[in-house]
Amino acid sequence: MASEMMEALMALCEEKHIDQLYLIDRLEQSLAKSYAEVLKLQDGARVTFDRTSGKFYVYKLVPKEESWDDETGLYTEFDEVDVTPKDMSRIAAQHVKSEIAAIVRNSARQQIFEEFSQRVGDIITGTVLQTTPDFTIVKIREGVEAELPHFDQRRYPDERNERPAGERYMHNQRIRAIIIDVRDPNSNQPPIRGERQRPSIVVSRTHPDLIRRLFELEVPEVYDGVVEVRSIAREAGVRSKVAVSSLDERLDPVGACVGPKGSRVRTVVSELRGERVDVVLWSDDPAKCVASALSPAKVSRVLVDTANNYATVIVPDDQLSLAIGKEGQNARLAARLTGMHIDIKNESLAADVMRGIPVKTEVDEEVEEGGHRCEYVGPTGIQCRNMARPGSRFCGIHEALAAAEVSDDPDSLI
Image (cartoon, rainbow, N blue to C red; front, side):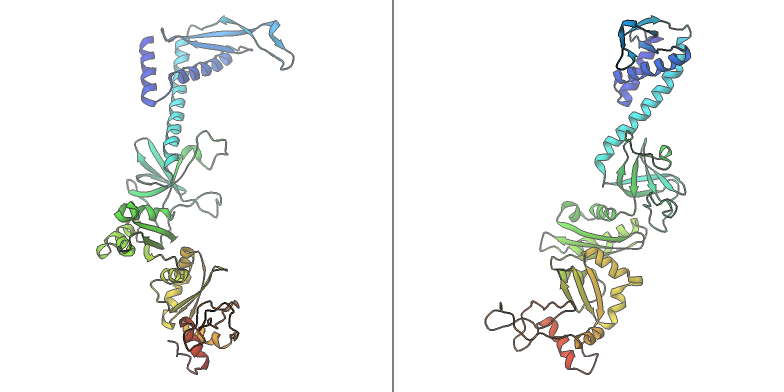
């Protein structure tokens, strides 16, 4: 019987990847603490485990008088007296069972932490097991679960909300999410709300990198690195903008991400439950980048103040509402995508503003021979650094605006 118990312990250690010495040591410590309470041993007890016979032995600790330490106020040496009870096997079996369950549970949590802490940022596909008002439990594989939190931020401001607005999950439904955090089971940090009932892996459906990973799955050029996702701006569940560029000049990065008849981007949109995804071309030129980010609106011209990270965008009158978007959404996403403050004006308003702006007449000293700088001065008082067109005081960008200064028709710029 004893040998069978030893074989079962060793098989369990091998199956759960638990160190045998660690398991036995934990069992001895747990039993020693329990028997010290049961037998009312004032100075404690020591329990040893005989691996050959599979039996436990309990020893009462009797302190030696000569081992008293005045500094610590404790005895340092003890004599051991065998006080193993007759019903040792029954009591030991109960403690061994509970202790082994705790060890296996903690070992599994530690293994999950060690594996998935290296996978933060990866996309996973899981099955919904349970949904509560505060979070959803997602099964990644057998024995490994993750949580997708969606706490009410007004009631629990310190908690996360990683579920897009309007999404609801059904039992056994398959969803894709991105790993954003893995909690250490041995951490000394204060426990979070309901931590004992919640898995240590935290996933998100609102993180911008989810779109990046979905494009890597659907677009081979993105996965291979030929097409690079340079920036992502997202309002989860509603709309996103993705700026892409290509390392190969012969390859259209936007077309590669959209796919034939929109098949690739349509798959991403389907996974995001109908969230609108705009794919735009990234440019190292800030003016071109801002104009592209405001797509699908058409832009007449962009004036960029790189020192203040500010861009003034002029659009046709009929494109103003499209450029701003519903409740400013298009302009807001474009600003996040480019990292610039964007001010949008229609051409009629720009013409009226130009009439009240003074124009500098002096010529910059550092002009090339036979030419001079554009005389346009922006709203911030900074003169345009472009060269003026031959026979004109302004560059090609501001020549039309300058013509409006002498025009009585406010629609002359359209």
